[in-house]
Image 1 (cartoon, rainbow, N blue to C red):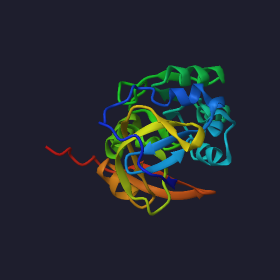
Image 2 (image 1 turned 45 degrees about the vertical axis):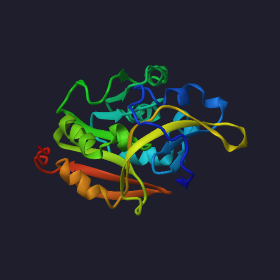
Image 3 (image 1 turned 135 degrees about the horizontal axis):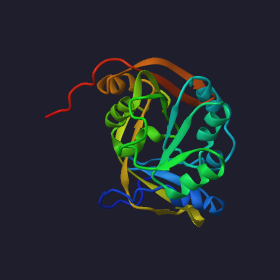
Image 4 (image 1 turned 180 degrees about the vertical axis):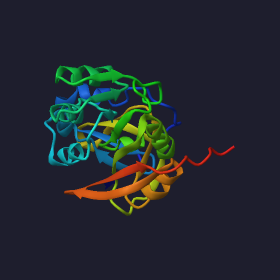
Length: 236
């Protein structure tokens, strides 16, 4: 993550469902960034998304022993890795282009908002949120609650989180394209969040999940969550 000057201030609103689609389609065109409302920006690892599964993904696959959902699958490198490991895997993404790419790589994918009905609800062994996808919807508690409804009683959620120190941030973000002289062209804002390895315990607990393990692969941090108890009631 790099600290940047706040850019493109404007009234927040929800983006189109496939806010990241342009980054997937235009990957040869140059750098893309995710610019957060608090001024933090991160370069989108587009080449990694389109590449083969890296060691961190292999470590996640090794923790899966049954049917697995890849939520926000993008071009499908995780879905493909799960499938090649002999697991039943389903990629889910709101981007039609992402779903086409995942299918073209030989994996199964569904174009769907993950908060909409999904096949096999309550029977999945694992749900995975990597590459910052814990930010989807801007509410990690609501997102993890949703994951919990998808899992079997002994299921787990595998989540990539920020390194300790970032805490929990919720707000709006934009996908930005880099232009000459360091200028960014910003897309429309959408709700997003960041969650670090320390703050995840409280967030998971509110969603009825418990932290089983925290582990690192290089500079990346991950947590494994298990179904713990009925989720805390929603505020009135």
